[in-house]
Length: 261
Image (cartoon, rainbow, N blue to C red; front, side):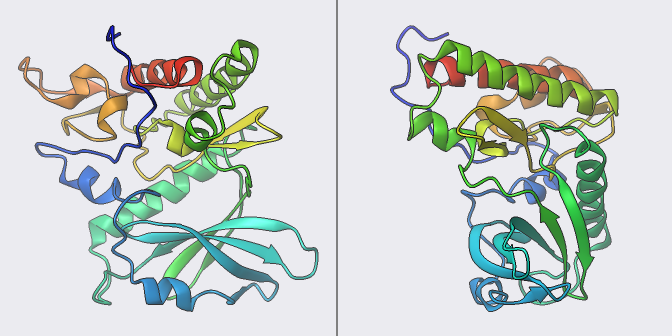
């Protein structure tokens, strides 16, 4: 760890290098990324009813190929998060086959992992001509990043930090048992609920079921393992499971200290 710690945990966007063009496209699906989805299109969906009762009410975040909305069931008043994955590019043409396949992979792997209590649940999938809607569990307390840096929820609270970190660890262990490797573990991709006592893993946009990769530089740089950054040592590939474990270690430092190692 650096002897002069950063004063706060800085927001990070995913950085990609080398041959990881696939990751470069996918990793833009972030809360802090520059959105490529038309804002008018995103705003134009507000008020839309899904399945006759679920109304989109607000935009929670945007990414390169999708928008996350808050929504309410007009009959039960239960709130949900809805992730809209666009089937179209910014100019209105259909996605390339490879990009559409990445979206289907995200949906499939997230659905499999969501059986775990510390992974955001997928309640339903609505397939429309222009996009796919994932009806998700709603966490009104935001992500772990905000709760660490802005609310001071965990730093100097070792018991709470330990409690939520063990939840994250259990969720990742469960994913790995299913041969699902997240590849972008960081506080922005962990949501908080139950007054900070419960955390849930989200955003499987970079997740894969491959155990190893030749694509270096895929993920968010401060959370990436050294071997995944580049092939400077001449290695031809790296393993995803150890890279996820490295990211967990960085998150633990975030929780307990409020900055990056």
